[in-house]
Length: 156
Image (tube, rainbow, N blue to C red):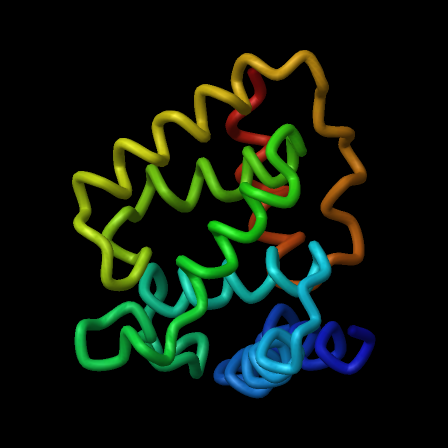
């Protein structure tokens, strides 16, 4: 993960188009059977981000587009995370945000189905008695920087 974080650090420092190699490494981990929480969260995020932000900024191909759906990992990582970590407040927060803010970026699923699933996940986050700590996204690459900002604007 350190090498992936280093690639993402280049992006956040202003070097555009450095997220594609980070995504490729995360995808390689996933395809090799590494189903750890961090790999799944960051891969889901980068696939979603590939649609929600322009390629000229990120260097990520839009893997949610209909011609590239088979290349995307958002839905499998999302399903894995929700099954393996059903009450994890960070998982609920991150996936709930992605599913509701840009549901068309889920890749291959109907937008209305994604929005409905997103509302369920976001409601589970909002009703969770567990709070996300202020430092939960520290040192978590582009995923962490993005969601630290969202967390600051979405305090419950």
